[in-house]
Length: 438
Image 1: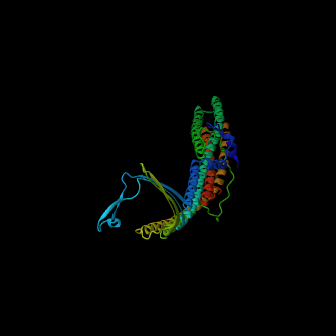
Image 2: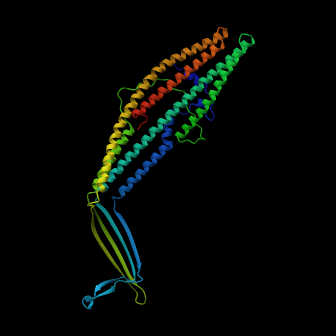
Image 3: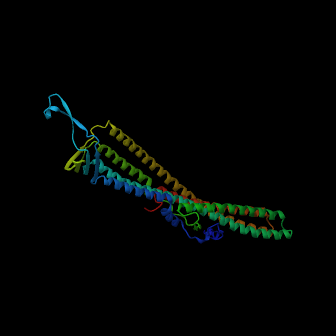
């Protein structure tokens, strides 16, 4: 039954968009939103930030080179207390001697390379796991955007088709007003009959104006969701596909991103626990130093001397006891792990509920669609017959208005059921994680 397509051509021009152009489909809107949506763009920037974090962690495992310099001008050279006997003085007495020169310049270059640092190795693995987590978060953002775009698009289709129904019925009402007015002039109808039809026409026109405003609001929402400027023109395909979607199977594969996010968070939590435990192990680094110290004095007896120095070494760091801080942090991470296990179980049950509800809703709306198709056909037949009977004078205008209202209600019920069926299919895809490709 494809009668909706006939009503589609009756949709008028709506503000800044030509509805009949059928330029952009739902798939095209989704594809556009996965690139231009602001939330998706922000998620991609988070991915780039994660890559920068990985580069920072990797840099810690590479050689580090530091250059240091120190210049001193002693106004009074500091002294040291030494036994006077060392210089021929009496035993038990001490003297203050000042060593060095008033001008001192020291420069050193130190290069170091971690040799063994278990925490650094685990941190590198955690950074790479963060990359996977960031990618999953971007995927989740895309799925949410695709769902919102689809739901908004279906609402827009509903409004557009309601306008189409009202426009078609309005045309019929105009013809009926002309006929009734002729009958009134020939004393075959009452003036109140024309007034009733005029009231029905005014109500339909008011409803059309309200629906046009709603249509434009939904269109502007789609612009925002796809990253378009509000001043841009967007022409959307509004003809509803009347083909019945395939009934969801009893057996299906769950590919939910939120479950994968929880699994990745558990992986990161495990790496964080390993990193805390690695704090109990020592770290070993190799280093080399090149040092140059210049000593000088001014005046008539000026003197300058450079004293170089070079050495290599190994450095061991071992935090033997930290006041049980690591043990406390490890306890926190273990509690977080238990909480993640609870969230995984909760999410699995929530997914099972969503799938069951979406499938049941789909089956119900599928049956309702068949029933409403028959109701529309029957209401259309009654309306046509009532119009003929009114022209023949066997029924009054009240019966015509009632038949028109019944037809309008049947049309709206069919339309709402068709959109509900599409929405149930959308919820099924969301529940099973098949909303967009990966």
